[in-house]
Amino acid sequence: MDSMQDDKAPKTGTTIVACVYDGGVVLGADTRVSTGIYVSNRASDKMAVLADTSVMCRSGSAADTEAVAGIVRYHVEQIAIERDDSPDVKTVAKIANQINYQNKGANRGQGLGAYMIIGGWDKTHGSQVYSCTAGGNMIKTQWTTDGSGSTFIWGFMDDGFKENMTREECERFVTLAITLAMSTDSSSGGCVRLNTVTADGIHRTFVQANDLPPMYGELAVGRRHGYQSDSGGLML
Image (cartoon, rainbow, N blue to C red; front, side, top):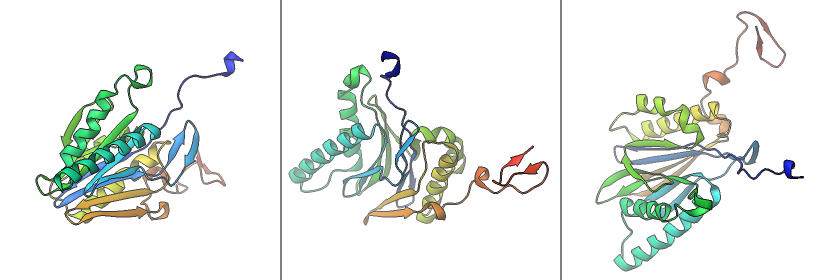
């Protein structure tokens, strides 16, 4: 009986990306929720609105990140009541980061499984992106990515990012990065959701799987040599 039990937590995966452009921030995520080898949801929303112009991308434990997002949203609302204005993006990120740091001993000493990216726009500092790790580190950056799929696209993003992109260029860049991760990482997949944050607010976009550009590994292989089976695979 004991040999049939496994106390290890199931592996989870995702891909989240955020990037600054000239006039705002684009945050994106895939939509697949996996529990081990089981895909429990193929059209989830991994981004949470924390303030009028602040958005959180969530990776890691869905329970932990949703709990953190709810607590942050509560504090943001309290600050907005006291100041009669929504807090800036940096303040929102600091609240989330502080919750992670104060709970480093949670989950039997492993800390919260909350790896977050918080981005947005405010009238004080303009466009901002912050990477908030589970251990309580907060790093301001022009672009970042996290989740299991991020391993495969760090080089792509480092090479492809350019300053002062237009909104269309940035949305296309983020979508392409997530699509590339989805084609390589089995724990990322489904569709792509984008949140574009500007001075006017948050603009949401849903990109269906059929509208995503095909990656190299997903292209149909022509019969150049060897034998092509009925399934389309190439047998050498």
